Image (tube, rainbow, N blue to C red; front, side, top):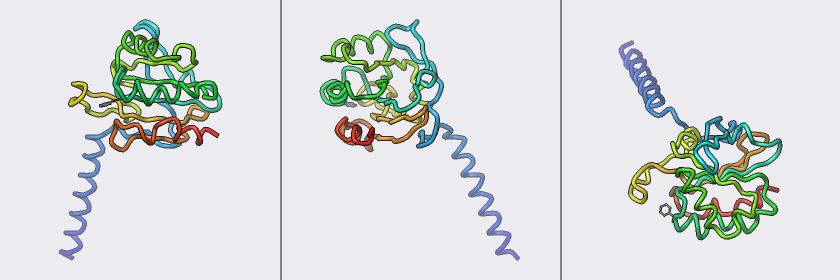
Length: 184
Ligand code: BEZ
């Protein structure tokens, strides 16, 4: 009887510990089948607000999250890889946790980016990135919280496939050559 009571107490403690953990960590990584969160972001200027979720078309789209505008990996490798294949991409949104002025200047600085239909979206508050569970502390590089490097294939407004860099910042699993075959 005492053993049973002890087991029940332990189970109850584990349960409430788990609940505490859950509440302490409410933002979960977005998953396959989830809807893209409806969070306000900006394009081109602070006044030009939009919600990617509300704009997503029927069919496929790409959301590309990057740690920072103008960072070497983003500017020299990651985004140029997508620009190179822009003609065959579905509607594509590059999201950066920078202000809209920096994000716009970055897009204008990337060869061929403004000619492509790729859209450069600013998430200056980081709220979209947080809602996706893609925020990460990159203080060592940028001095604050940023975005993991990821690509999401969206279909009919829902997550179809996720490519997140395991170390948050490299350009491997999320590079264009790796993602494009999954677009079909
Ligand atoms: C980059 O080169 O894109 C980068 C470097 C350090 C941290 C995050 C990104």
